[in-house]
Amino acid sequence: MCYRENEQKRRAFTLLEIMVVVVIIGLLAGLVTVRTRSYLLVSRQNAAKAEISKMVDALEAYYAVNHRYPTNEEGLAALTEKTQKFPDGLLSKIPKDPWGNDYVYNCPGRTSAYEVISYGADGREGGENENADIVSGQY
Image 1 (cartoon, one colour):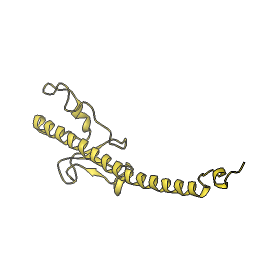
Image 2: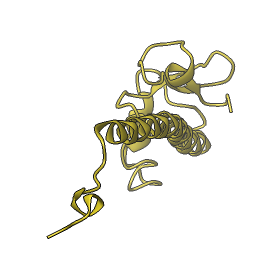
Image 3: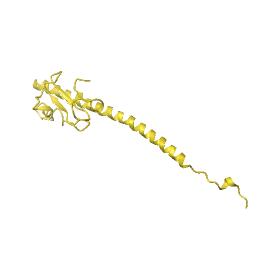
Image 4: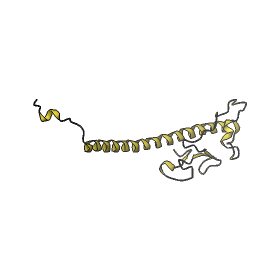
């Protein structure tokens, strides 16, 4: 029997080819992760702004009924209290910010009658990027 040399050889991927593919997949995964992280940051900040806006609306409704804003001692919890005019309260509950921290309420605020603040990812005053404070009336 005579058979050709080419017929016996099996074609397979070399280790080098496999390594190149793995490196390319790793680079693409890293790029996707970095881009996704920035979208997650922006979405958390937008969620905090939306929740603060909802609390601001409730504070304005509280003012319309009581002719004053809640004191610092009453805090945002005053918005959840059931009253004759609001049998379910102005808010069903006070949410945590997207990073799991409590919102801070100050009356009077630094630049207005009150302020509602999320201190960002680090939960401390000040900061930049994901640690930036989000304050009512700021946006």
